[in-house]
Image (cartoon, rainbow, N blue to C red; front, side, top):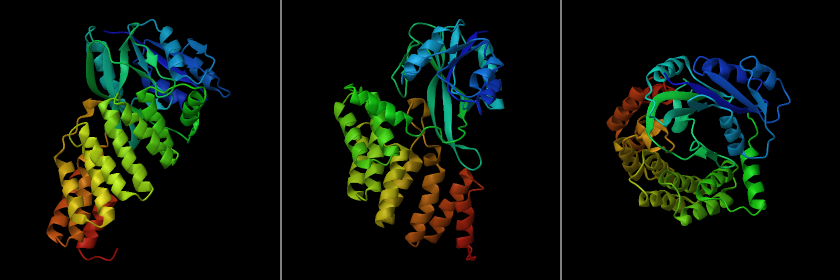
Amino acid sequence: MITISLCMIVKNEEPVLARCLESAGLIADEIIVVDTGSTDRTKEIASRFTERVYDFSWEDDFAAARNFAFSKASMEYCLWLDADDVFLPADREAFLELKNTLSHDIDVVMMRYHIAFDGDGNPTFSYYRERLLKNVPQARWAGEIHEVIAPFGKIMHSEIAVTHKKEGPGDPDRNLRIFEKLRSKGKTLEPRQQFYYARELYYHKRYRDAIAAFTAFLETGRGWVENEIDACRHLGLCRRALGEMDEAVRALLRSFEYAAPRAETCCDLGQCFLERGDAATAAFWYELALTRKRDDTSGGFVLPDCYGYLPSIQLCVCYDRLGEREKAIEYNERAASFKPDAEPVRLNRAYFAGQKL
């Protein structure tokens, strides 16, 4: 059996920290909590679970804080979580089984990270993260914000998921503030950081600035392919928000320079043509989305609905607009096969049955 150090960095996590530690307590052989300046009961709560609570002076550098936490680990592997993460019961049981069976020659275990959900609690946005890492010098974080550990050694992918259960808005400006502080000091962002800086600009609806930043990232030619594809998608989103639909389509098509079409991009193109009033072309892209194979192990951001439900429900709309009622009904039922209780499915059934909505 392997041994595990749970390593966390926290600040003012009183509402969620106990929930996280309770969900991971049976997994970890030791718990290390690094506090970066809490003014609430965070440290008191952490002390109920572990004696290994440390202070770290916050310097707008997540990698530095996480590396400090890892430096305190004494077990064979390091597991990291944020305070608003949890292991749901099934995932906790699966992790305990993994702990008993994991080969000691595995260096990194990639696990699913579910961060957005529909009304029924099903993940709508997820991706793999390096979650369990051999406690060796190569396991070192890099990046002041959106920090990451470069893959090393023997890697395995697991279906075990960490569920992100955010409570409250947090500080929505923190990441952008850190990026702009770095830039004001004259730091040149490396491609990955440039990509995430552009995303922050997009989230803040600074669409022109985001377009410039995404374009600069793509022009480096040194980005990771999944980030390049996502940058094209976000360029399309920026252009759509500005009402520049032709440019949005061009941005999305640019993603095909990097890899075969992803279902997410096909759905974006479908939406563009639907908004243009071209239901036939929109249908083409949504139908193509249904043929694309989902590959969570690529490491890219995955929108699960794009691989079944979303293109199906949108094809219902497309074919209804084209006057092809039977095909519209067929695709509505196909959408139901993915989400039987979805409200749009119910409303469409009522609409096709001639009921008053």
